[in-house]
Length: 344
Image (cartoon, rainbow, N blue to C red; front, top):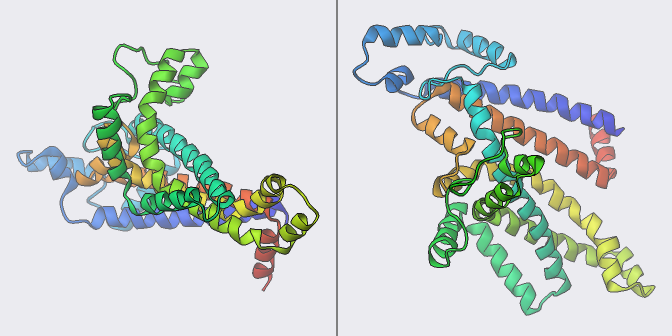
């Protein structure tokens, strides 16, 4: 199967997944008990006003008609109005999404780089004290929730050592860069505002590290396991028999095939970063989309809930397509296997 055909099939499958997700989240948001309009307007709002807003949101129509109207608006790029902020949901998403993406990108970079490094180091020093420490840290990282790390880092580096800021995105008194992407570190680099860049970077470090710990630990374990298995393969033993230096075997012949399981799991780990971000954002007072989504769920803000879930779903699907393409590029046998499966 050609790579282009492989990508086209993945895109078609992803459209079906997103359509199913939109139906599921729309139904769940509507059938949850409680009148969202009454919750938004308050108990003292006149019944006539509540009914008027309900009609404006088409809540008086059958569920399938509500979904059709909503889907048509979403395809035009309109997610409707937020019952709580009284602004366009699209405006809210543009305001909050860049902060969460910036946090997830830095957490993903930490998770990927240090996960693979720790896994490689653990294999190089197998059965030594270094290997044991890496394995203990990996187990602790997997079983400990991200918000626990967030609280520990706040207490340790924020209060006890006082070396890193523990809230917000910029230090007081520093002028933020003009909004280009909404991600302060990138916008400050584009505009040459290095003072804002370093301030934003120090504010990002603790929340990104907290968010990345589970994925980092998992990546380290998978990388170690995969490299340990490949070390016993015949081609590695043959390279050793020819006297090729161990370092060259490790980084030239062992690392690339061992990264395939690591890259495969990256998509799921990145989705986990976004779904786990809300508690970290709460701890660090980070103005991101995850915190906005949790507030929307608690207030039964229907349009905001559906929009946040769809944005996260689109992100998850996009990342997984990128990961599938990367894996298919690293190992063409995967494309061939899927082609044979489809043929059967």
